[in-house]
Length: 335
Image 1 (tube, one colour):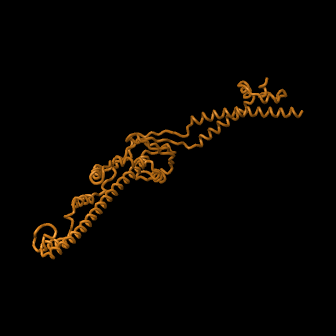
Image 2 (cartoon, one colour; image 1 turned 60 degrees about the horizontal axis):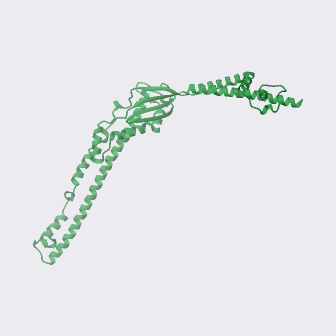
Image 3 (cartoon, one colour; image 1 turned 45 degrees about the vertical axis):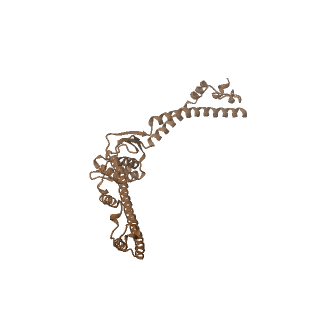
């Protein structure tokens, strides 16, 4: 038969035989004939797969639902924003900053690169390598997912990391709050100074106008008051008005809205951003910590190793049989 070239090792194998295909029964006969090679290759692949599995460091996934931090007297900050700056939801600002802090490479490096010591114990967190960290937002709920190299990551250690991210978020929000208050103060100071300069310039212009009217009235010998229009006031009234403007000590009472701005400035100066702090009792807490292994995927690697072993075993058996047939053909030609 034309397919016998896969299993024959005698002189019946011809050159035409080598160009023919083979069927599954032929393949089975080859595997049976070369079963020692096939079994050896298959066992070798399984051993390599086992060594690979044991050499991999396990990766464990921690999943936990966390809550954004709270600030003491946060309602006061909202009132200040609404009254003096603009309507900003401070809780929303904290939420955004908290999510950013949880994903911050700086926070990860700060926390997981040095040991953190407590009064009661020492947690060597630098031995825990973080492979991946993701934050999933579902509405206002935050799910933290961390892939680490250690299965027994202490809950208080993870709590401290969440607390560190919370402190970073709150400090940034309070820093922005303080900067906005400072900017508002400076804006008011600049506006007050500008209004005072304008008021002074307007008073100087008014004095020049009155002096001109005084000279006209003097040349016309208009000494007494006749009318409120220009030089008809008379030199006596104009002289008194000019001296009054020159001797004015402050233009503040004549500046519209100045007292209101000064009142707002006084209230802003009384704001102490340092009194707004994080509420420790509500930060970094979670109800349930879920831990499970993600890598290596033993089932997947084992199945892949078995499939690869079968394929390589079949290929090795066919290759060994083919090489033997080629050698046989070469010997037949030499005869």
